[in-house]
Amino acid sequence: MKVLPIHCHQRLEENTLVKDFSISGNGYEILLDFKDKNLSFFYDHDIDHIAGMVEVSALRQCGLVIAHLGCNIPMDWIVTIRNINVDMVDYADKDKESKVFSTADLIVKRNKYKEIFLRGGLLQDDKYKVRMTGTIICMEPKFAKRIRG
Image 1 (spheres, rainbow, N blue to C red):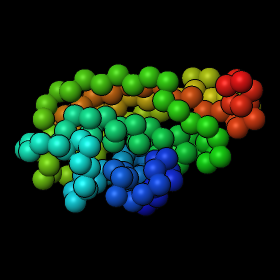
Image 2: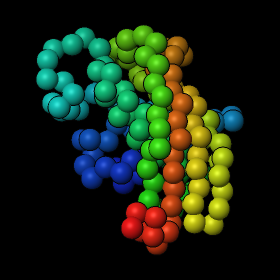
Image 3: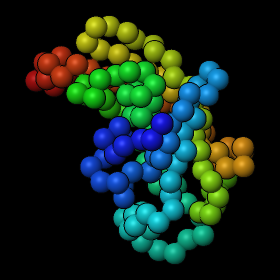
């Protein structure tokens, strides 16, 4: 399924690092798109690999996509990252296909509030380049407004 910028909480296509989303076995497979991106904030010097902070940003976007498209969290809900733990295993090549595989477990499920635990990582040639765990919080807008004061 094609991913739209809104699914990643992005406004612009050029800042959207997620290209395609699918359910794969007991998890989610997400195709990333790092090519032809003018991400000057992350690439302010010449390097021969994908910058680590770009990888983290891509994993964040994947978590949001999983919440909305995989766990059916409505687009008008407030969805935010509670925590993300990243282990940079190896350099990711700019010229190779990159994908993310992740599982998602609903660990708190209430009417107006949900928490999703993610486990997975970024792969190239079926080898992990980055491993990740994290938790996403999802709140119905009126509930979120009460909590935020």
